[in-house]
View 1: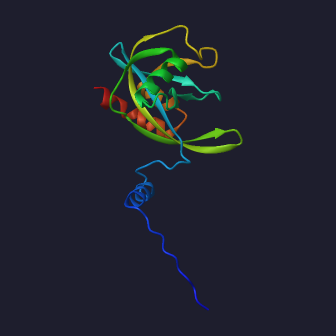
View 2 (view 1 turned 60 degrees about the vertical axis):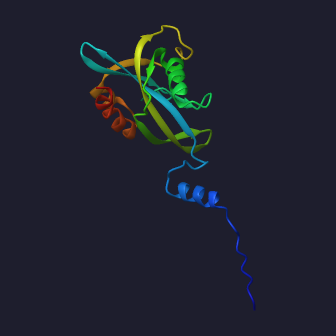
View 3 (view 1 turned 180 degrees about the vertical axis):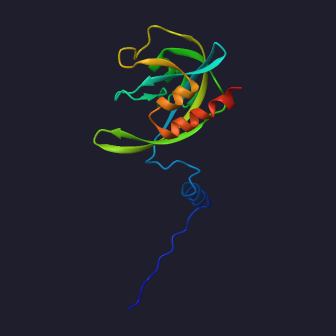
Length: 163
């Protein structure tokens, strides 16, 4: 019995893309990306972070899916929609967090990239004011209140990034 082995030729770009995916340099297509902001301010010489509640009443930061192809725009826009804050988004992301999100009846892994947002003002009226609670916390309390441990670790890096 003879076996015929058929070799497929790959282009160099295909091989590079596959290697990058295997080494986690590029997010896999089944792992959606989200972008968010960490709203902060200096109040009475102390660093404070604003957290918002999720639909399950957990304390999180504002986040959402990519808009206009710009992660920083998305972070700024989501911060306003979910918490009513306006300010300046830092150019460099503080870091990224992977978390699980319930979508319909299944759980999906999401890669969340977060940007520090220096808050300059807070609006009383904003799109999701009836859906969410917002609150300013001192940094250490925000780290404790945050429901996701990976997000708490990232919040711990905020003090060094801001100063």
